[in-house]
Image (cartoon, rainbow, N blue to C red):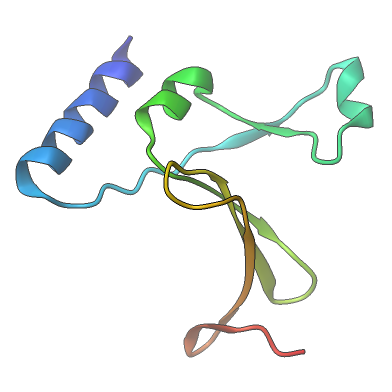
Length: 97
């Protein structure tokens, strides 16, 4: 109940002031029997409340070395896709081949 109320307040602020709101979400390991067959056994905390309060959802994960992967998970205007980037001392950069 508190989470839904807080998310509604953020959506109202975004609409009123015309700003983007970025929400991060913790993930946990899924430890049931079905998780051993899944490619990624992590699931987000907050469930459907977070999913319904978000317009576009991105899934960030660590790749090899300094590489990170950003996947468009759910969006009304963008197709599902992935992009790779690196976090360097100078900031965010393209991945070197």
